[in-house]
Length: 197
Image (cartoon, rainbow, N blue to C red; front, side):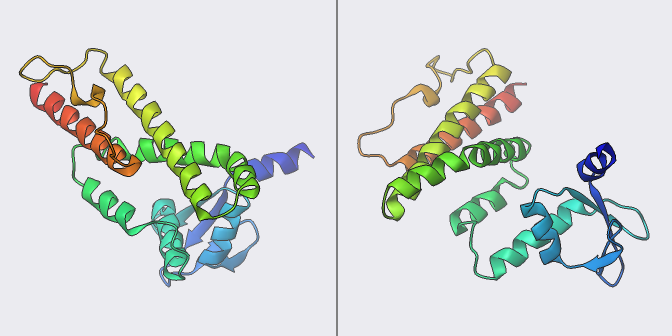
């Protein structure tokens, strides 16, 4: 029994061959990207190695799974999100993005049952959007708080005023606009810190 639990806790090793075939070493069978997607959904961890070089290909294979899912018309990632994500490559915020996204998705996964219950009690797609919007705002506040821990002394502009992040949103500004403004302000603060440092 303990041996089975240990077997289930360690990641399955998948070998990727030059012909792009994927081989599951636990079941001694060839698998598809859809098989690996099903393993992810069932929370069975795996790592993918190049069969010849031993290079870890897990990241690229997981990205392939997402691309395949998106190409089937299951558009989980909105165009605006994809464009913004591309903009972060090479940007000063690039190093913060992975931890922020991981933090956000972990919170969403943890709270998904709460969202499902809220959605089952209410009608219409606006309830789902509002619940997700509320979660994004909560995540952004937590992320800003975490960022403040790394910068305990507030960065001040040349005029000696407090950072713009403390200013109140303008009347009628939407939640998405507010979130974009906060990210821009955070990016400006980080840019200033890297120039000063």
